[in-house]
Amino acid sequence: MPTEGCDLRIEHFDPARHERAGFSCGVERLDNYLKLNAKKQQKDDMTRVYVALEDGKAEVLGYYAINLGMMNVDELPKRPRGTPDHGEIPILFLGQVAVNEAAQGSGIGAILMQHVFEKTSLIADEVGCHAIVLDVMSDGGEEAFQRRQTWYTEFGFQSFVSNPARMFMVMKQVRALVTKENATAT
Image 1: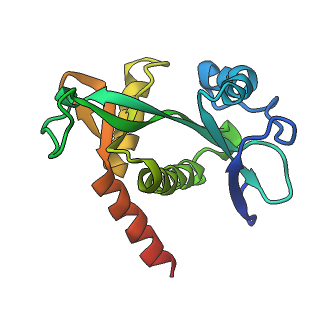
Image 2: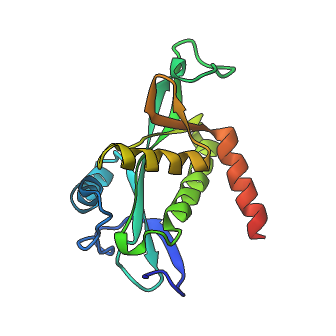
């Protein structure tokens, strides 16, 4: 397994330095995103991609993509205090999380998610952000969808009542996870 006995690092995706041609997570859409779209979307300031790599190596073991967005507060189960009259609240949208098949089951996905939570906390401290929102991919059928949805639920995400494939986690939960992780790390 690529991660045994090595240090892992997560850094901002640099197409000139990070090898992605051999990346295969088992979902063609996610493979193609990293290989064909991530570079252009970053260049156009549409998203930011972060990659997991073994120290000293350039092959991407996993990645995630994030961007800022807005959502209508009426989608939430409870309207937060202080919501603007127009009803739009700031969010961070988690677009993709993928781990190379050879590294799946090694914990890289959870490490990437912890990085998402830390990054979201920093962003929220600087610009304001009420929640992380994501759409669970349906590629691979109902069983694959349920497996992905369960995985996100284990981190604390919950589905919107109106759309079970769309999930969210409010910043209060995110900050609690980051605080807990930082306390265990020390």
